[in-house]
Length: 86
Length: 257
Image (tube, rainbow over all chains, first blue to last red; front, top):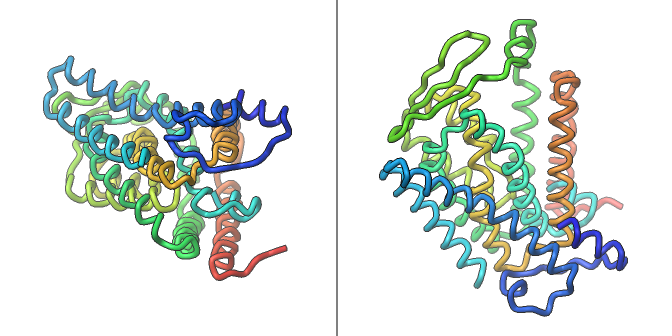
């Protein structure tokens, strides 16, 4: 994020456009927009990784009830991410 | 979020998307501290997250169809309520005893595997505090509502979840706050991707906001102990009321400058 913002500042380009998930992976973004968006996406993924980590820990502890709960949360988040790709 | 709308003239839904990213940044930075201390009950957090994330998606989808003016008015109403509660609320550090308690860091906490119970050591009371989450359906319903508000207005939802967990589910306030802090990042993400799909995430706005919030949170934790809680509460309450009035006027089409 910081690199993208710094590049934008260096280019004196403060234009702001909405970017969807498909724009990130479809190419066509400027390098500074790509860096900023990648940073935002990385930040957005960290809570998902938090849930995945808990799921893994509870599998190792054989706490199957909460494995199911964490899996349920991941399913809901997957629905949200798939909506985002639409 | 109101600052983005009122001071920078950014569209309400773009501001909400940026605010959700800020919530994720705050949760990531602060939540890890509580998890490390064992204060956040992650099992309870995950159970409530099922309801909150469903609420978040619902709120995000509702925000796409509800006019921005209506959302701004709802947001203004919410912060008026928050401001009034803050002005009327008692200062938790109003006595030397309470100040001493506030300065004490809680000891290591533990959650019991396979259940929604746990414990932590309270150094002020000098004993292990045990707790068991109760009234799960109530907590689930409130979490769903908090998720809807988060998705619609770009807030974390903690101002609803913490009182619900503390007063409704019987959790100690420190556990409720720590668990909520852990949860709000996941809640924000559940609706954030809905805003991605609608093109409301502007990296040129979201990235500086996230960076600023992270830096501000780190700075704020350093100076928090040096500021009078009473003064901070009054300043914040007045500020919130001014923002609420401006948000209502903006939603009615009255502009300044």
